[in-house]
Length: 538
Image 1 (cartoon, rainbow, N blue to C red):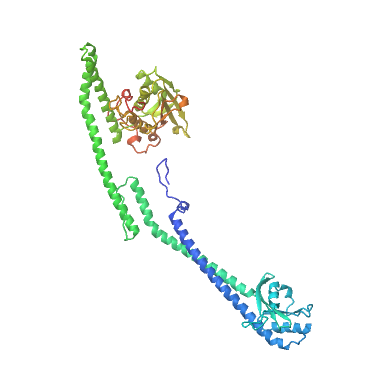
Image 2 (cartoon, rainbow, N blue to C red):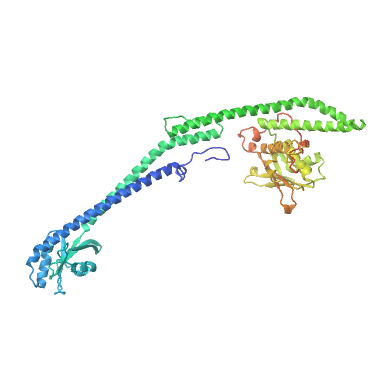
């Protein structure tokens, strides 16, 4: 996280480190999901297996005891039992010690309530079970008895029961057993809670294991990210410590090889760029001396041109024009080298923007071709010489390639504080506008819209120098075409802060396009020749 106003970097907080997109969180989440799935599956399978085993054991024990006890006590039952005999049979069968209750039903005595516990009656026996118990099955080779013992699990009063029933004798009464499974359900509930706790503990253990594993795995990844950030900031000596022989170690070695190759290429390119800048600067300086003498001679020739032979006069005027053009080009190259080398300085003072625009127009006799809408009192801290270069380029280009009238408007955008405001200067012309494919390149050095015109008045550096002068103030220039409904034409917009960043932040780093105040090193071209630049209207 970066504070863009002062360049400080803040360490991300714990919540930011745990954002959902974090690789650590995703790794822990995967571990947790896998552990939870495995533990829940194992616990579920264990629970259902134990549940079936417990219930089946309790059920089989009760049914077996019911069958044995019924077989032992049915012999004492008379052929035509009375209601008392049925009650005695129910009590005797239920006294086997297996904690179940018995209901005996005789079709000959439907009103006789024969049960061992009045809480259980024939109405609580499921109808389907009664039907199965009382329906005889055909006697076959595999079935020697017409009646069998049937059972069914039911809920009575919210408690689980297993209910079994069978005919006492083919022509006798029917007995039903009620066995409560409450104890078994309590045991199963305890087992379920134990398995749930075990699952939770497994999840916690998996999370801790994932945390430890992610710390081990992601530490090299974080180191790689930090190294890449430092490399991106220009610290080309950044390298990673290689440990081990796994994939992460191979990744670190690859990063180191890439950083080494990048460092060598950058050093080579920097050396070539420095040589090119020195060559241009040295060439420009070397050309200034002979150009100074040539300019003096051409000034004299220009003064005497009218008295020369008519056959010689055009040649003299051509020499004068080309000498001045060469002088302008050399001055432009020197200005460009100062910006490239970071030696261009800003000598700023609080100035009225309207005064600077009128001074630029009056000094070049453009007042008849330029319409100015610049209210007085729009103040900004600027370098008047550099701003004059910008205005001369923009207005001169508009006059040359767009045609008059050229309109210059000045507005001020207020900010939160007095020093945060901006001054906006828009220069629009009445020409055909700039082709869409040219707009992205109008501020490029030596760019000319008409590639077929190798010879032109402009050097292709004017707008580039204007942009550099705007940037050294902390501003910028944009190029666009006005809407067709408003007359068309090109619109160049200069945006400047009321106070340059260097003045708002005294500790800002000097040099380049954001340099601090100081004396300008060397001479710079004046604004009169800046109108010969990128021919955007051609």
